[in-house]
Length: 121
Ligand SMILES: [Zn+2]
Image (tube, rainbow, N blue to C red; front, side):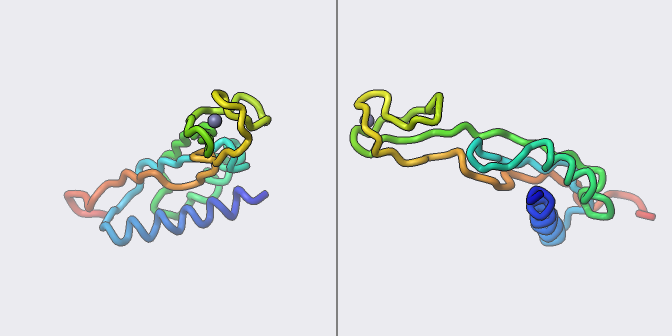
């Protein structure tokens, strides 16, 4: 189940970002996950619920944005989302395609609280 190690890495990035930017508490972690990344969303959310305990993101929320697969034809330049797994250009029929998006697995942004007013306990 590689979502667990993925989430461990993500939370490390989140923690060091929070430390660097002086964030006290992470409220939202917004991820972009491509359709082709092979990451299971449910597993990732489950891993987050388990692993966030004791981290800056303990009370935070995980938001997952699915990035659809997009390819571009290297022959005619057409840009489209294939509807099935047979990759063929919609306008010229070429199979000389490159993937533009859909494989990403990254943190898009993190929302966090700065140091709060009052005395922290
Ligand atoms: Zn084409």
